[in-house]
Length: 103
Image (cartoon, rainbow, N blue to C red; front, side):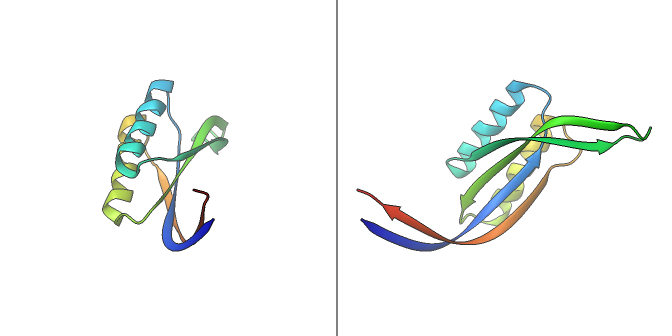
């Protein structure tokens, strides 16, 4: 076995969608731009203008990449447009990634 150490970015996007089709389109777009993703289902909430607790299913989509910021921001813009969202959050973590090859 061989272990490779490399520097990469982990990008985490936080968002909601209105339909399963929107989520499928976002996953396809993430694969087109980055080659893959990890998706986690979450619960989110906020307070409305009427001071009511609003709750929804939300998602955390993560990619590991060395691509430039323009690609990272591009996916956030696609998520906002596809999901018809006012806001999409994303953050970037710098990684020292260790990969064990078993082949």
